[in-house]
Image 1: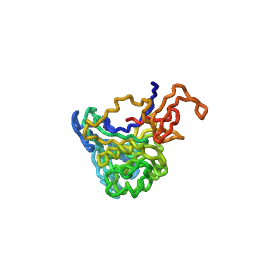
Image 2: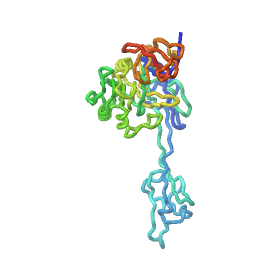
Image 3: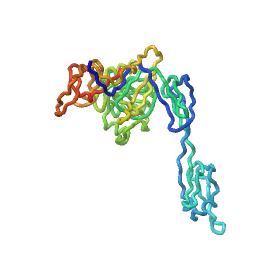
Image 4: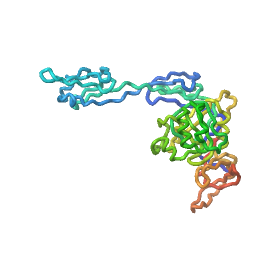
Length: 374
């Protein structure tokens, strides 16, 4: 039987989800293998060095740089408060002395007798890594963090912005083809992961942020609305670090596009349950998908689909077409012709036949589809 392979998107009612939670720098791990953790449990912590504030001390004291060390009231290693006097000039006949105040809180890191600069190092900043997903610690990474395992339903999206967030699933739309408008979002959705249907409008995004929702998940989004939401054009290869007060995830693509029925029904079946979302997306090598993870209470309900051949295309496998003129359409692989076919562009490529959900069959290049992993 003919087979092929392609990148896939997970939309599964049950899988064994693993979250690798690591610090940006070496630190202390606070959990052990076998521990049960909640989404807000701290699994590891560390500290980052504070920012350095340079002070043109010699210039402000009107003295040669080599004399600066003798004028310091605070020495290297001493703690200082903001606006505390750290140096004083000799003045004229002991009068008219100039005082130098620290512009920031921190520690005197260096006094330059050639540069005339005093460096103030700010307080160390605590860094904590949360479990994000309720589950069990299955591996400890010494000095780095831990791996959390949970049985969960999972939906991967096409694109997202904003970081990690957690909250109950709140269904705003009644059908996957219904556009998400602001009048569908109410104050009762505060702290929730709001699920729409088709395109989320700019006013709906603004309303969600106003009521205090933590995330919005819907089928599509206009690129101009995304730019207005962020306040700038998105020109980076990875997202997730935006500080916009709301995580956005689109499951299908940009524009007027409905959420896949299968995805909508899966999320609707978990209305009211805790969802852990992350909008981080990487579109270059090492693809990173935004995701919605709903931890399951009963492991028995989980089908460990990840054990199947990941990325395999074969007759009956659900796929999404990701190139025009059939962009966004869903269907199942109906056939995998072995010989390359002649395309409209005049080139030849390996193709496959897709039986569309709405009826009919189309022939597209194999590179133009993305598997929807069960």
